[in-house]
Length: 197
Image (cartoon, rainbow, N blue to C red; front, top):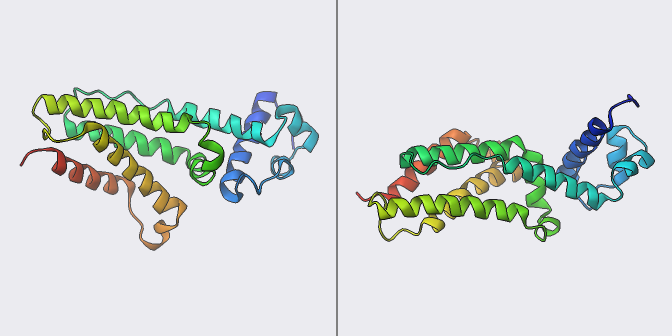
C-alpha cells in the first residue's frame, strides 16, 4: 500500500471500507483490526484517524446523511404525476447510490435510531411532500378526504420497502423487478387513490 497517501484520501478509504464491512458483516462483528487489514494499514495508523469503532460509525453516518441531504427540493407547482416521478426517482437514486449505507442503516438500526438524523431526513421529505399534496387538496386536484402527510409516508415507505426486499432480503434473485417499472406502477396506484374518477 502507498504510505504517502494524503490524510484525507486515506481517511476516506477507511470510511469506504468500514461502511462496506459493517454492511456485509454487521457493526458488532467487524473489528477495527478487520477495517485496518482491509484498507492495508496498521491498527495504530487507523487509530490516528478514529479513536474508536463508534467514531468510524459516526463519520459514516455523517457522510451518508450529507448525501441524503442533497436530494432536490420539491417543486410543488409541477403536475402531480411529474412531482411523484421527481420525488421517487431522486429518492431511489440517493438510496441506490449509497446501497452499503442504506443496508447499514437498516441492519444496524439499534445503533442509529438514537442518532435520529436519518429519521429526520425521512420526516422532512414526508412533510414537504405532504404539504404539496395538501395544496392540491385545497385546489380541488386531490380527493378532499386525503391526508397528504400519510400519503407521503406511504409513498416513501413503499420505496424503502422495495429496496429492502429486493436488495437486502434477496427478492431480486427470486423475482427481479426493475426500479423504474416499480416506481411507475407505484405512481399509477398513488394517482388512482388521490384523484377523483
